[in-house]
Length: 131
Image (cartoon, rainbow, N blue to C red; front, side, top):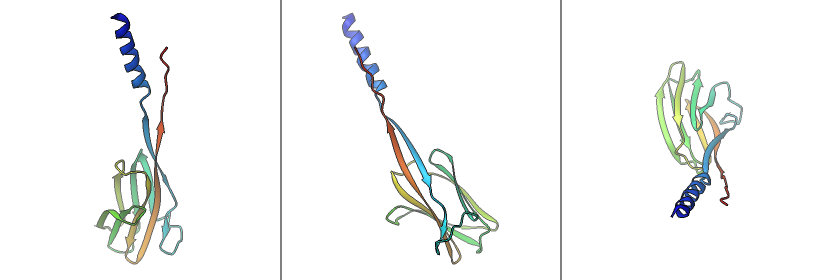
């Protein structure tokens, strides 16, 4: 009986130690305008926590900006038109998105600025031996 309990405890411990750990990371590329020029001075995207982003857009030309998040098929996942005077600032929690390439897109009057990022989930496994 004592050996059976020991084996059960060892098996449960092994299962707990061999569980997979998942960690998602985002890799942000440089912001570009519609004409292909770098727009890093206007659009800034910072990952403040894992999968949580701070998006800011400075000195808009028009009184309102359109902010969208697109997936790799250009499907709109989020859209917001916001009145701004000096700058746009918003925090996004993107932890529910699947692995893939996504784009923040800001339309300011006739100017469109976008910045792409990739979400990659890293999996690490721990293997233990029970003797």
